[in-house]
Image (cartoon, rainbow, N blue to C red; front, side, top):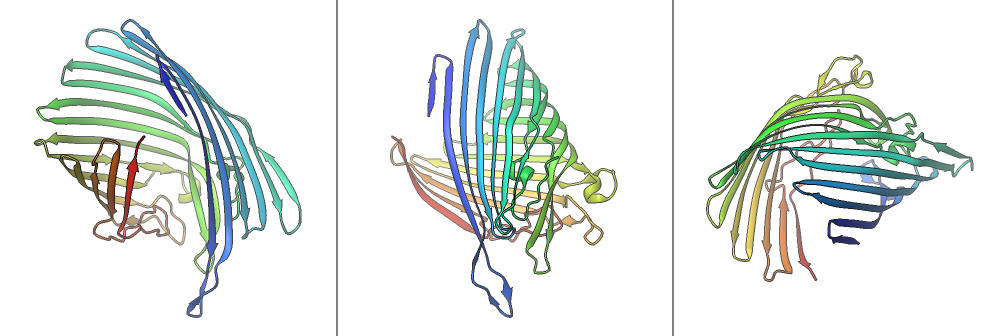
Amino acid sequence: LQYDKDGLKANVSYGTQEKSYDQSKFAKGSWSAKSPYSWRKGHNTNIDLQKTFDMGENKLLVGAGYQKEDMDLLSSSKNNNSTYQRDNYSVYASYDWKVSDKSNLIFNARETWATGCDGYQKDNKTGNSKYTHNDNLSKFTPELQYIYKVNDDSSFYAKIGKSFRLPNLTQIFGNGNMNPALDLKPEQGTHYEIGYKSNIGKGNLRFAVFNYKIKDSIDADVKYDKDGFIDEVDYFNEDVKNTGVELSYAIKHDDNWSTRWGATYQNPKAQNIHNYGDMDWHQIYNKYQLQGAVDYTQSKFAASMSVNFVGDRMSTRASITKPQREIKPQCFTDLHFTYAPEKNQKAFLHINNIFDRLDITSNSTSNFYSLGRNFMIGYEYSF
């Protein structure tokens, strides 16, 4: 439910999600019958309220938000029932100050805190119950952005800010083969970025240089049993840093055709004793990424094809038996069609992984593969 009038915006939402997992083992040439493995159902209630004030050439925005999380879980593998919950609060403000005809300063600030972070678990075999509570978590995250307008078609910008992300409830309290990590800390980051934007003829150019460092980034260590099934998952904190450049260009060739191109080169690294056995910085993820897309529109019909190539990939962890390794490049290809006979109606067809590639999607020492060629067809009606 949304409300928007005279600078006042309010949003109230409620969501629920239920997931169940079955398992089947392959032995002596055949698969065993499926048996329940785990089940979970979660709820989220969100409330957000904000007000914008026009102050001549300047603008002030103030707001507040609340989120209630709760989750019920059943694990057949560990024979337990669990219930988790948490209340998240935030207050925030943004002030856009027009310093001169060519420059603006934007101040953003948010205070976030979580309370009532509780976990309850009962062992169905023994009947024993345990209750755990996570300490209150809070963080102040300011951001400062400066924009300099060169002319009507180009501008420079620079910004510095803090980020904050709470761990998920299951990461803290565990469930099934996910072990509890009550000492798991929230992620806290510092981010820098400078860039240039320009409209050149029918095209739009963007260039940016960025740097960030995340303290206590959350990662997972997965252990497998002799049959290759996940046995245990341990969550832990590590430090991550990255520096890179981005370049993108989009151009509208005529009334029907347009193209988009982009490239990123970066140097992401992680540091933790858990994975690598030392406190050196090790490369993770990918060093470069290339993107391209072609768009076509004609009356009520639209089509788009995109390609995203990710290369120079490295696993995020190492062990004595599985050292850090290079991972083959990924290439994502998607094709989309839409037809809108009326303004409030649209039919669509999405085709993903056009060339049916078998790409490794994980960055760990284990391989998880992309879904093969797949499609979705649908119809939307607005009223």
